[in-house]
Image 1: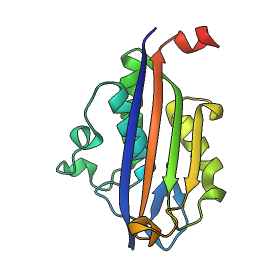
Image 2: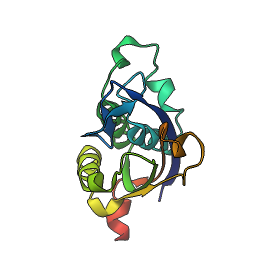
Image 3: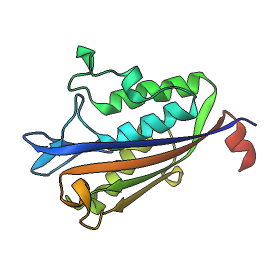
Image 4: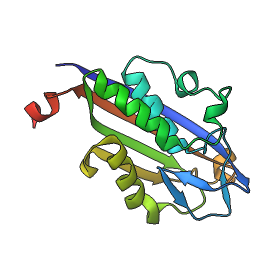
Length: 166
């Protein structure tokens, strides 16, 4: 059985005059995440974790900010590309766990929609995706409401292995 584990992390500043995309959904808020793409740091962390589990380098190597086609690009598109790569290599997602760290906005009302969005993109069941929301207890840039960060871990297995072990 081939099992791979990946870890991803991303952080983006909150800024005026940008929409807030997180977990593939638009969240109503007065600020959004600064980035070359749509700035969805949740998807970026998941993409990095998936890439790491496949033995690849980070998201910036595969979707560089020097490439004009990535400017303003939806992170859901990048996740779709990476998801396709992992399935082509004979892997499937067994489980993903994420931790979103943000003081504002309050994100608990959006967890179900984020889960639905990501599960659809990754072709996984809701029980195969954990989403937790934490604050930084007022500490640092996140605690001051200047940024949002996300940690993600993934477990990949060879196609067929997940079903054989259930």
